[in-house]
Length: 326
Image (cartoon, rainbow, N blue to C red):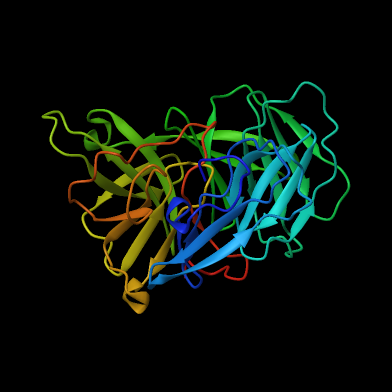
């Protein structure tokens, strides 16, 4: 949503996307909101494009909130610098975390859950420029880890492990037991991964595979295309193996790394296409708020990463659906 709290605009100004059994997307909030008028947004279904679900944030939500990310169907916000608020994208119900009682960390920009909120193993990870915070849902305290590395763009869970991608495209693993630690993973990159300007890469968990999706321009300045690499793990390094086809999979990526990425098996079930990548478009574009591109085909020019201070259309995994990658 590219406006602050206001009266409900026409649906065309807030069009979004989604499928309850696969994904959803919306443009819900700016990074900060300044008035007490309720926020409304739309969730659209790619398989039923003439139907939209109008949703709203809780009417008693704080007047000024900062968007941190979306995870397991919940929009994650911070407010008053020390509080976190979860808002269910479908029902508007909310949940608060304990206060973050650390001084000097007002630059938190990213939040993600490691499991659904009702899971006994659910944790919230928050990233700032200098620290990483960790809260086990249901407890009353936070853990702080001083972090001196590069800006983290994305965190993905895969086979019980937590992987993070930083602004330089480097891969890291994160562990929280017995204490929080972050280690860079040596990645053997193919030559085709470093040609020309890049948008991404995105990490996508796809069944038994962890994929890296890259969007780049080749040396001859031909139209941009998506490239997908399967990460092959060995004892010492990770090798990137280029995939020519996604077979019966479709991938979903957002322009904002704070929002979820995921895969879907046999998307033809709901009218989608295998071997295609679905991307939430910038909010200023007309028409449908997403674009679909077959792997290897030219990509529309307006697909590019969104900076932290902007919130755009996004795919959302509903809180009632946890096995979209299966």
